[in-house]
Length: 541
Image (cartoon, rainbow, N blue to C red; front, side, top):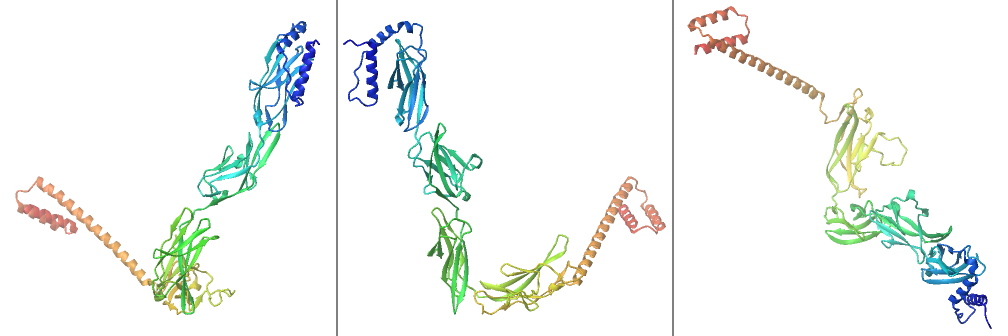
């Protein structure tokens, strides 16, 4: 049976179609394409005479998600059939092959997108013995993100203030990704990004501060043809720790029955718990405690009054700090010795008396409790600390653990006798040691001066004014003597110069003349007599 060229081409096309659908177990037999093309060229020679260029055009996506199918289309317009279209990947791999027997038909090449589908695609068209390559399309395969999580550096996400922190938005799968970051469920945008920096999938903070502690999360997303695929992470809590300050130490005592117990308190003013505190006694560690919620720890120690129990220090430790407090002596000295009140008056810039401060000095005692009395009445009423009774003195204030009493307003009402007393603060039933009474007196006419029993009397101020007047008078007298002496010396030199130029031949005549002049001028001053005597003495010699 003799097969025509058209019949062979149809059989070949049908075989290729069935093979692409997987209906054939064996590949299609190959036909000598060159022979067929020559026959087709001879058959359609009159029609192709006016066509010199195929100019195939390839269209299709340049970005696609992995998984779905995409279609590439290739067509060569104004070309007489038959036309053979081939889809070529990366210039050497043929993906598909189609024939157009009618002319102007679009060749479709559907492919399922996988990671291996990424590459450069061209269409090769063959008709009438002419073969041309179309434009190229570079397909990028986008893998949607999945299994997104936030990782931190350092790990676990705990950083100290001033250190560097880096958070990464990691995915198990995904390509061509963009990232969004959230702090306490609020997106970190360009207007709120400081001090955050975005570098790829990382969120960086060069110097963290406690205000950036909180929950962080991220979104990894990609978009193809306005279709967005998003994968969100879970929240990660970031802790910013504050460095612990140098520990401080205090020592207190309380009495139980006839025994005494000491309490050593260790604390830091700033830092992030938990913190480990250690009690050192004479350089040896004797106790320890962990402060999980606060920055303080308490240690019980045995004390005996008037016995030095050693030197105590507090030590604080963290994973990167080791600090020690100043020492404190565990020695309890009972209150005793002399108690004295000192009065200090405070003035404004224009010498107006405004405030008086009374200080209570106790010569002996480690833990004194101070009480103040005004005209033998306790300030304030210690028997009724919460009562609403009008206080004895409304304008008073205590300072330095009641060691100082400040009279914030001075008036005749504040005039009177003040004294203080002291006892051990750990023994409410202990004896008091009292000071002598000190008089504070505020005058009615002048508020610029206050007097006490130890004040300087007004007579001393008067004597001080007399002394100042005598001193000024003496200085003026000395100045007058200097002026007169200078005048005498100047006159002496002037007369000496005159007598040197003309000395009389007879000194007796000169003396007689000077004597006559001196007798004739009885009304001259003492300074003139001084000059004459000097002149006579000088001439006689």
